[in-house]
Image: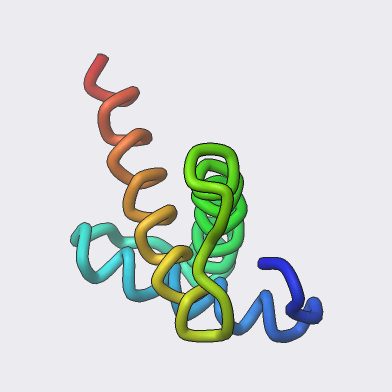
Length: 83
């Protein structure tokens, strides 16, 4: 979440995690939503910069990246639980 302050990153991370939990039908609390959103955004930003050389910018772009990243983390956790 480059270019964002800590408070903005927490707010965007919480929104991204909440949206991802709704999309993936996962029941998680506020703290886990924040963590999923922030870690998901960091992970997907790293992958986008590594593979494409750029990422989405601004609040909306980071929200989209965070939601996709959090969905990937939820899917990965579900896969590991089944294995």
